[in-house]
Image (tube, rainbow over all chains, first blue to last red; front, top):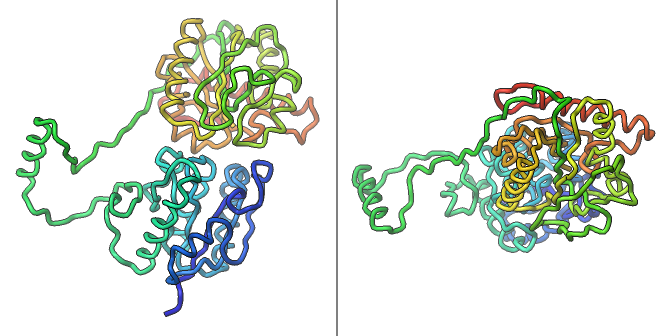
Length: 349
Length: 76
């Protein structure tokens, strides 16, 4: 039997084009496997073959989603594949979004299966888990060796149209699909068993997990801007030059609070970025491009806003865990409230 | 972070380039920006035009803060 044909989607980094300085790479294709594609090819054990690799820069994709998707799909199509594998993207937000979007478009538009892989906290999971199979991976490329065999195995099952097991069995992130099956015991008995286990403090598995919606309703609008104190917060890593608090370039464990009292303009001599997840050239030249102190000072002088708060807060939003980000947010909010700040502009890169 | 600031009762506007991520993290007032490495600037422009562009975006953010909304709203 002929081998199944597989196209692999990668970002500029795993596609061996370059780091953040190449994140604006437009889509391109290469015959055969590239980088992790070699391991993927091996994991198919001769049943399928990576015939081509499509590579796109993470920033190019994120900033030109529609156009990029169109170009990538047409390149994928040229290889006439039976399956598309995207990533794994681990905890890289832009890459995860791209992998999810590519996989979803492949399933919808080309009518063939697709598999991707991400860390459960990757924002791409929330966006695409309902439409595509996402193998749960570790948060960094250390998890490559674990992720690739699972992605290949699920891919082969999809190719051979075999029955796909539960998320626990196959290692993918639950898609919210319900499947009917014949249980050994009737519902009433199962419910009572579960209740007894719960009362005894034993482990039990719910048959209907409740979705965890965490939405905060919007606060009322600011009525009088000209009397309002506005504070700046950023996840773009803008810090005083030298990064005095040594905020980590990725997976930040802290945030910084820095005075901008009397500062009219951020310059390359005074401020820089500590962020390791985007090309720092532009922010290092002029940090106002991420933290708009200069124009807020103008608006303050013109009386359009009451005051720009004396301090701004910064962390690096690059693979930062949701738990840490929430903790930073709570601490920053408490501090802002104590200082009587009326509203916040939060910028992200 | 956006959500925790909102939860504390302070109105917040999120200025970012990847709007779908902003929606996923639960921002309510969202202003799309220019590009990932320079959300509030464009190094291809002369300095004065770049600043004017930044000012326009910040004014949009201030407009968002003074606008009553029901749910997640993108201020294009």
